Amino acid sequence: MTFLCYERCSTCKKAKAFLEAAGVAFDVRDIKNEHPDQQELEILWKKSGLPLRRFFNTSGQLYREQNLKERLPQMTQEEQLKLLASDGMLVKRPMLIGEDFVLVGFKEDEWKKKLEMQ
Figure: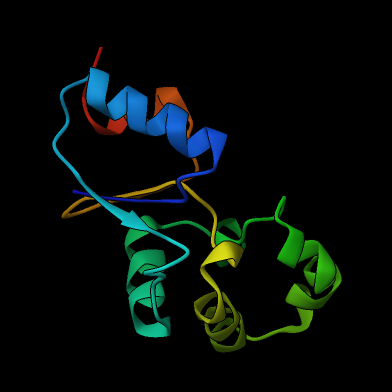
């Protein structure tokens, strides 16, 4: 599995500690320095089954600066994917990528269920 995160993010730190405590094997990838490109984001989005808007870091500074709350509804999916690919800080984190799933944002119960933990 790949754990896509930002090292200074407190939620990412919690998710990483959760995975380590559970003994889950994963590779770490820094979302700021190695952010997904448009093609990878499209694959992750489709694999996740989530609405594309869930991939945006709505609490981030860039999201607010670019007034994306107002702009996103008028954008096509391709435009949104291109925008997400432009800067890793726009992408919701952490993200856990498995062979057949993508978890976006850390919700412990959701992660436990997907990883089949009790």
